[in-house]
Image (cartoon, rainbow, N blue to C red; front, side, top):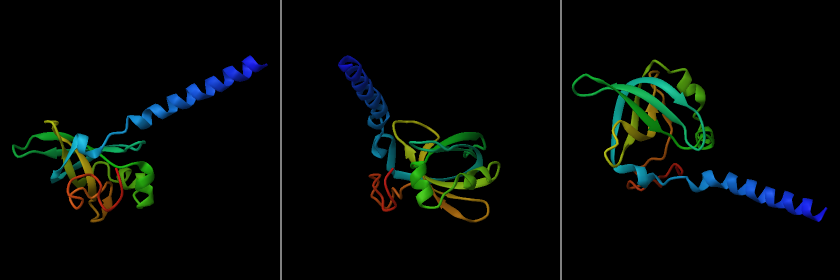
Amino acid sequence: MRKRLFCSGVGTIVALLFLAIPLSAHHAFTAEYDGSNCADVKGTLTKLQWENPHGYFYVDAKDASGSINSWAFEMVSIGWLKRVGTTREDFTDNIGKTVTVRACMAKNGVKNRGAAETVKLEDGRTITVGTNYERSGGNGQGESGGA
């Protein structure tokens, strides 16, 4: 009986350790994005990944030469988005429509990737999808919450 209790206790501890692994893999904003290099990207919303720990959405935008480039934008956690009133439908209802994304660009030469702050939708609404990195001095700890 004691051996069975011991084994189930060890099994529970091992399971909890495996659950904790994704938490330790969480990255800091400054490790991936440049808070001093933010810009607007205008294009067609093509896809949404509504998942934790961060949501992602994708936009096809024309570059200066007229070529279409696919952009990937990271958002804050889904729970945080819900707290500020941003919903999945804000994206799914706008797939195929023009949006303007305010985002900080990725570091280390990664192209067409950014940490999004806001998205202006075709109907004129602007939704919050991330921390205001620029107002925070580029450190990822802006006034609207954490990433």
